[in-house]
Amino acid sequence: MAKTYEDLVSEARAVTQPTTAEEVNAAREAGESVTILDVREPDEREQARIPGSKPLPRGLLEYRAADELPEKDARIVVHCALGGRGFLAAKTLGEMGYTNAANLSGGIKAWREAGYPVEGG
Image (cartoon, rainbow, N blue to C red; front, side, top):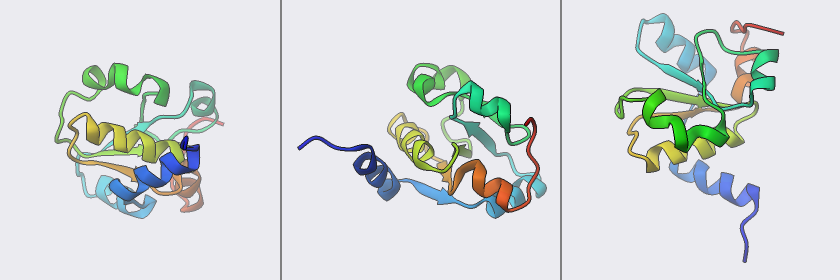
């Protein structure tokens, strides 16, 4: 039987470390090295983005990850709008050998709702 988007996200969620906006913000404020990877499309990013986040649309992740993310053991927090694409991207990064990739639970929506700053729109 063919898998649905929901099936794929569920599988990714089962093998991917989630993190919260509060945890990411605390790490940044403590001066920890955290790469926030925004896997949304450029038009979504124009509307709002987490300051300092790195754009790498989900559709280009496999193609550009090695160039954009050369350190396989760096802490990477992936985010999208709500979390689905983020889980898929974090799972893919793990499959590509990235050992410390997590997904921002709730995506940029959760970041905004926690009261943390965004740039753009």
